[in-house]
Image (cartoon, rainbow, N blue to C red; front, side):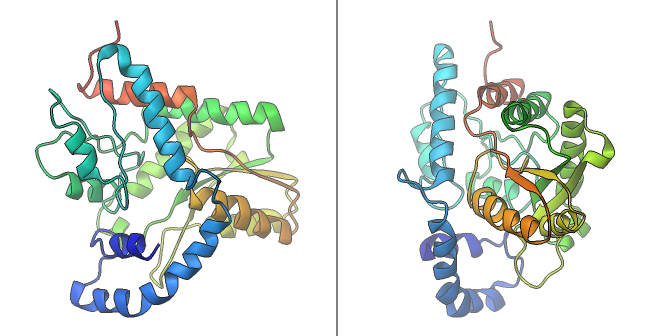
Amino acid sequence: MRRYLAEFLADPRVVRLPRLLWLPILHGIVLRTRPARSAKRYQAIWTAEGSPLALHTQRQAVLLRAFLSKQDISVEYAMRYGEPTIRSGLDKLSGSEKIVVLPLYPQYSGSTTGSVRDAVGGGVPMIDGFHDHPAYIGALAASVREQWQQHGEPDVLVMSFHGLPLREIERGDPYLRQCMHTAQLLARALGLAKERFRVGFQSRFGAAAWIRPYTATILRQLGAERTRRVHVACPGFVADCLETLEEIAIEGRQTFLETGGGEFRALSCLNEHAAWIDAMARIVREHGALPARP
């Protein structure tokens, strides 16, 4: 955990403070306390097979590889931080005629997709995002509808995206605009009236102002209003992870129920949904990296 956090929090795309100021704080204070707190949160969601994020990502790669096998397309997966590294993935594909990198961040941000570009380097084609791609929106809608068929529809659907410091938006980062566009497209695909969905942002840390409204604030408001049934979907996460399984499914549930809410359900991310595997192939194919489907 300490090694992972050291790599993640040392990325200048993630923490935009002068290195001479931030690195002593990171190594002298943050990495002495945060790994233990983070480890406790991970324990709450860890599986017998390991990290849910790593597990779902690996399965997605296996399914996409099988989906594309008849076209003689190789698929490797990598993590921006930790193992397997982006460099190791590129090395495995080094003999390929053409390589394309698909960061699994639907909405572009310099701190996520931009950081992947830094790690990939120049000369390798990369897809900068797919926040409004019809196949991605269709996969989201299909996944949500299937879960509603099992559990019933909510009175309110909260769409929760990862947060971003407000100063990044003020500097021109398109992330907030793209999140709102995704939410509107998904609401339209689900046939939701304006009063039946909310958009919030989660995973805030540090003292800086982050984009609002915060998901936790929305859940407190809905709980105080005695909302009968609330579901939370996380369209910006294509695989379940700490932010969805612990922050939403555990902490979010507690926030909603403690403030007076009724039924709460955290909807699963796309994970291995067949429509998502198909969407990934379509997104890459339309960027000219794969041959058209016969």
